[in-house]
Every structure is written in C-alpha cells, then in structure tokens.
Image 1: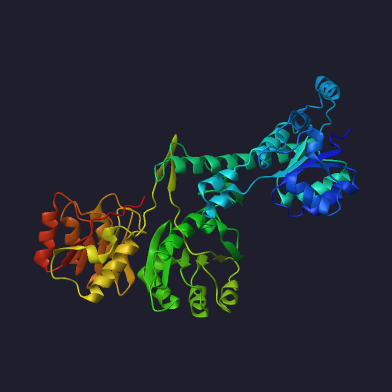
Image 2 (image 1 turned 90 degrees about the vertical axis):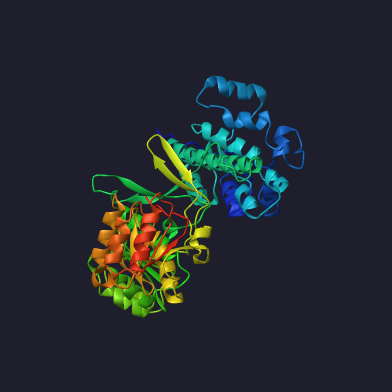
Amino acid sequence: MTDRLPIRRALLSVYDKSGLVELGRALADAGVEIVSTGSTARTLTDAGVPVTPVESVTGFAECLDGRVKTLHPHIHAGLLADLRLESHRAQLAELGIEPFQLVVSNLYPFTETVASGASPDECVEQIDIGGPSMVRAAAKNHPSVAIVTSPEQYPCLVDALAAGGFTLSERRALATVAFRHTAAYDIAVASWMGEQTNPGAWPSWIGGVWHKVGGLRYGENSHQQAALYRYPGGPSGITGAEQLHGKEMSYNNYTDGDAAYRAAYDFAEPAVAIIKHANPCGIAVGADIAQAHRRAHACDPVSAFGGVIATNRPVSVELAEQIAEIFTEVVIAPSYDDGALEVLSRKKNIRLLRAAPYQHRERQLQTISGGALLQQPDRIDAPGDDPANWTLAAGEPADAATLADLAFAWRACRAVKSNAILLAADGASVGVGMGQVNRVDSCRLAVERAGDRAAGSVAASDAFFPFADGPGILIAAGVRAIVQPGGSVRDAETIEAARAAGVTMYFTGTRHFFH
C-alpha cells in the first residue's frame, strides 16, 4: 500500500514566474486541473495552458487592486479539509467544494522591495497576505495537500507527478520548507515595521532565519557535532566564500578564517593577516601583497606554521610561491591571479577560498547562556581612531613615519584578543601579546616575541594602562612611541614614565577590547 497522494487539482499563484509555463504544461499533460489567479493565470493562458480562473471557483471577482483574490471559503476549505476524515469529506460534498492536492505559491518580493529603497507605501504594498495564507493552510494540511514554494522544487514536483504523487514524508518535508519560508517572510516584515516605528532604536525583539550551508566533520573538538549556517540577505562573508581547492573546511578553519578575513580588510593598503586560534601571528601592509605577506610571516614564523592567511588583494604568483613553502591550512582572498591557483593547488590539502570583500553587519550578535548580546560592530571609525584627533600626552610629536607606524599598530591591535599589545615597525607587526589577564603580561609577551626588533618599534595597547609597569616594560625594550586610549586614574604615572624616558605617547580616547 502506498501513501502517495495523486494530484488531480492544483492551485497556482506565484510572483516569481520562473519555470511556470513549463510546470503548467507538465501539470496539464498529467490531467491536473489548474486553478490560478491574476498574472499567474494570464501567463499560463497566454502560453496555451488550460486554466480555471479562481473567480470561477469563488464566484467572486478579485478586488481592491488584487488584495483579495484567494481569501474565500471555496478556496481555503479545499486547502484545509483533512481528507482522512469522513466528516471533512462529507462537508466538502455538501458544500460542493473540490479539494486541492497541490499548491504552488511564492510570495511578493518584500525584502527586495525594501532593499531597493522604495517608499513605505510601496513596501507595504509588497506585504503578501493571500500567499502566506495559502502556503500555511496547505502546509498545515500536508497529509492531504503538497505545498511547493520555490521554482527550485519544480523538477521534484514533475518527478512526483510521474510517480503518482508525493509520499507523506515528502509532503511533510515540503511543509517544513513552507513554514520556514513564511516564518522568514514574517520576520522580515516585522523587523522592517519595527524600524519604521522607532528608526535607529534597538529592537524590542530579535528575529532571524539562518539557512544551513552544510554539515562539518566536527566542532571545535572532535567529540562535538557542528554545522555551518548562513544568514541570508546580509553580507555573504566567509560563509558565502567559494572553495576552489583543498580539504573540507572545519569549524576551527571557519573561526580562524573569519578572524583573518576581518583583520586583512581593516586596511586600505595591500594587507595580509596570519591567524592561529583567532589571534594574529602577524599582520602587515606592503607595496604589494607578496611583500605584505613576507612582513606578516616574519613577525612569528613559528606560530604561522599551520595558520590561516587572509589577503585584501588578489593572490599573485609571487605570493602563491611564498605560501607554498609554508604549511598553511587556509588561504582567503578576493581572487587569485593566473598561475597562482595552479601553484597553490599542488598542495593537496590546502584550502583555497575566494571571498567577497569584508562587510560589517549593522549589528553583531553574541549568544550567551539564556540569551544573546547585540551590539554595533567595532569599526575603525570612531573619532579617536583618526591620528589627527589623538592627544599628545608625552614626548615630542611623532614624525610622519612614526605616526604612520602608530596608526598601523593601532589598527592592527584591534584584531588581537584582549588584553592586547602590538609592537610594529615599517607597517608590520613585530611582536604580539594577546589574551593575557593582565596588561603587564601582554607587554612582556609582545616584547619577548619581538626580541631585538622591539628596539625602535612602536606599540599600541587596546585599552589604557592601569599602572606604569606595562609601559615600563615597553620602554626598557626600546619602544620609541606608544599609542593607547588613556583614561586611567593613574594616567599621570604612565605619562611621567614616558616623559622621563623621552618616549612619545598619544592618547586616542577610544578603546578596542576584543573578546
């Protein structure tokens, strides 16, 4: 005994007409009665596909500029009748209503209309009412009706016609997709309405739909299951990157890759970020992307082994040859020059991703136990991020070259987990102290990593120095200039330590914690 449900009567009402005529012909050839509305019916009729106009079923012409077409008992009773129940079948017979076994419907393009900059009235006009009602009715009644919401599903529908209809499990799967479709639509409408009511305000609720891109081998550790999801409608980010070569991406590849991707695109100049466990092994800019990579790699070549590399320029053949000499897990770039892909593809396992330029989302979400935190992304766009707005706290004003290095260090330090100290010279990090629970240890770590290169370098701190001991370590190592937010109750001690050593110190007034 089969649970396939033969399709004898179908209701078609779609905004996206892709593949509609071909589908209509397939349904007609299978002997299916097609009931249709408005422009959908006209498209089918013009193509010679036989159609029963919906008004001939309802006995009521569409009205209010098409706002009311299918909202009628003769339609919805045919969608909602549970044909497993004798009482429902009897009521349909008594009312003279024929049931539907199939609904094909997709919705007005609300999100696209909003994105186009349309007026509020134009956006409201694209809030679909009848479509979601049909979709939800059919999805609820999936034991008796199949619901198709995308042209991508049409080939499966044609196959089901040939097989004698959809099975119950197939109808349940289609219903699941349909409810997700209407849920995403309602969230988009509610979010937009909230923004219209209170422009710029933090929303009183947060809704979102993430689409599964695929499963991952495991999570952060091998005993953890994991999958990758993408938020549609926003910046594509690393989840939308095209993998050109190599092994399957892992959970940790994605987290490190995102950190590298974000760091590289913080710079307008050709830049490379090398990341390990979400922290930089090195960040640098250069006259070209290959030079930037050499400088970044030189910061900490030991830690760069097995790292993730991101660039904000196409990968050149020269850069590809440099990377090929080093064990690297992932390379993320906007593109690869002719020949570069060939060079890197000789490495069997290296993962090569092509990703669109990094774009910040308007808001950043961080889940915590029992809820979530929402904040504006931390961009380098606060007044204190512009060196022209810095306050000279100690020492002589920096010359142009030193100020450029301080600006680089300040920007690069933002990619380092707090407490963060970054030493830099000539547009490249030379020592990084990250993730320590006190700033003194971060200073020690940065100086240790830099070694002899600390002498003559500049330093950036993501937050103020609570005491003068941290700057003292940097000064003793030969750091010639320091940039930090300032704002400690002991700023005077820190300023005096720099002044006494002849070290230039700037305050930005802006902090860049990163957790």
